[in-house]
Image (tube, rainbow, N blue to C red; front, side):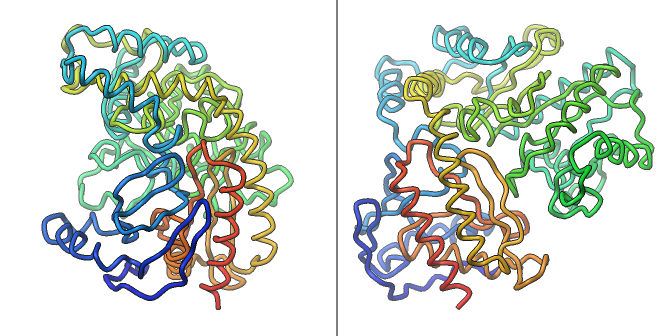
Amino acid sequence: MAKSFKMESVEVEMVETPNRRICTRIPAPESLPVIEKLRKFEPVSMSGQPLVVWDKAEGFNVYDKYGNKWIDFSSGVLVTNAGHSNPAVKRAALSMIEHGLMHNYCFPTEIRSELAEKLVEISPEPLNKVFLLTTGSEACECAIKLARTYGLTKGGRKKIKIVTFMEDFHGRTMGSQMAGGSPSAKEWIVNLDPDMNQVPFPNSYYYDWADESRADYSDDRCFETWMGYLDSQGIKPEQIAAFMPETFQGGWAQFMPVGFVKRLRKFCDDNDILLIFDEVQAGFGRSGKLYSFQHYDVKADLVCLGKGVSSSLPLSGVIGRQDVLDLYGPNKMTSTHTGNPVCCAAALANIKYIFDNKLIEKSEELGYVLEKRLDEIIARYPEYIGNCKGKGLVKALVITKKNSREIDPDLAHDIVRISIEKGLLFFAPVGAGSTIKVCPPLVITKEALLEGLDVLEEAIGSAIG
């Protein structure tokens, strides 16, 4: 088990730059009563993040009440693509509140119609209908429901398998967690659905059979090897309703080989299987494309949306083919907060801001800056960084024990802690607690990005030392 962040304020070096400020002990002594109150009244599961008590956040900065200011490399877990408290998003949400509409259930509203139309307008074919929801887990649950219903109409009760990928994350509700790829995370369920099946992700740090050093790694032989695994598990094409990968694996920011996904798309077409991409953390410009699955140059049947769709308020959805979205009749597939008017207004403003300010292109451009600088850091500490994957403004460093492929959660924890003491904010290490995700808001400046990476390099050196 990785270290926890201690309830103990320590003396740290003071920092003052245009982008960072550390002027107290860390965590700030005055913030400890707030943390203690949370630990008293919230479950222990809520106590895993670094001890920074957020007071406000703007653009690519997070502030506490005590004068400290961080460059944010978390985006609030890949939400604030258009920046924290984006002025256009704030104005839209406040305007809807002041207009007098804060909830509407499934009754028709103009703002929901505008957002649904906009999402279809910016999405590639055949994504031409959208069902708006609240959380990423809810979107994944809905996609599973639609896929199984589709399978029942095509092949009866035998065509209900949902095939997902080892180490994928789809949420924490029962269905989304059964679809997830972490066996330990679903031990509580006990009676797992035998038709929710996981197979190796074809670009995983953990599976030697897909070692990227192989010359044939991303070609047809990789797909054939993977198909052999399906067959060894007794999974037949006629049993499968859908494949549902994370577009990139959230824990490691790893993409599948393009050639593999193209073969998977053809396999789905040949066997009337839906291909669903979980884009909850991958979408809305994060990787240098509107949707990250567009890097594969394939069509999606369903896409799960969330996080960056609003850059702020809780909103998610499933966008996809009309024949699949229309499988349920009136009042048969609803949600209490579907298309909340305030969230819809925020999402519309967010999408407009992303396009008007070319944040998708900016993510791609700054992604090259990020990659180059991380390569320099890896070259300095190659014995402690086992892997670095990602595209655009999402990268993941897998921290390992010295000259080993064995992960090192304690070292990753220390790197994050020291970074925070220097004014650079990460969320807690993920992927068994050894992966540090670099995912700043897309509005970050080149100067702030490079400054943050300099801090990261310093933190790695300090943690090792």
